[in-house]
Each structure stands twice: as structure tokens, then as C-alpha cells.
Amino acid sequence: MKYQVGQIIIGKVYNVKPYALLMEFEGGVTGLLHISEISDSYIRDIERYGTIGDQIKVKILSIDDDNGFLRVSFKQVPTEESYSSHVNKRSAPVMSDNEFLPLKEKLDEWIKQAYEEIENKIK
Image (cartoon, rainbow, N blue to C red; front, side):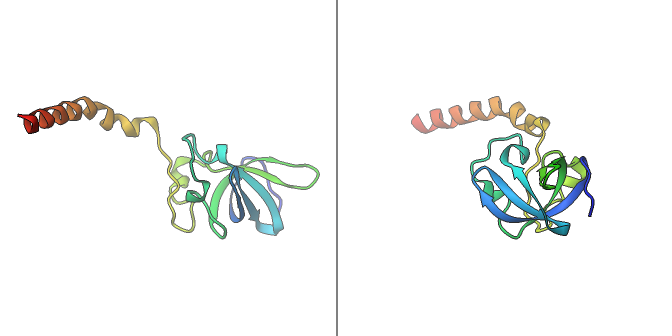
């Protein structure tokens, strides 16, 4: 299969490193999904996002001209596709900043309630 930069493809994880998931694609082509291309958030344990045998939908960032090795990204897969991109049904979180707005709006109220509960227990 002939791959192109920007193409969305499914690959299978064949090795896990602390910094990346090594993947194999159709036609025996291999590639690297670097930890920085999985999420914008800090990743403590890369195996929460992929383990050996998992199939993950990714976007091709670059192709090595000499050996065809692919550099791919999970976080650059369009949002509408990323929720279903883990073929093994493991959810790899894709979060936007506004998903935390309800938390931010309620935080002051919750802190006040917690202080009131503590004061009531002390009395």
C-alpha cells in the first residue's frame, strides 16, 4: 500500500517503550507513535493508551524516504474520528479545555461548602 502524509490509517501496536508505541501497518510498514503525539496532557503511563496487539487509528505525519518508516500522531486524528479510533474499545482521552469549565465554575462553591462542613463539625 502506498501511504501519504496526512492520511488516516489503522495500525497495530507491536512494542511499547516508555516514550512511544511502535506500530505495524498494512504491507508490513512500521512506524512510531511518540508519546508527545498521543495527548497534549501529561502521560504518566503510556500503556494506558496502547498495549501490544491494540489497533489504533492515527494520522501520518512523515514518511522516511529511505525505509518507509512512518511517524504518526493520535492527537491529530480529527475529533469526530478519534473517539472511535481505538479499535479495541479502550478510550484514549481526547479532551478540550472547555470540558473543565463546569469544574472551574463550581470550584469556589465547593470550597465554600467544604469549609462550612468543617466548621459545623468543629462546633
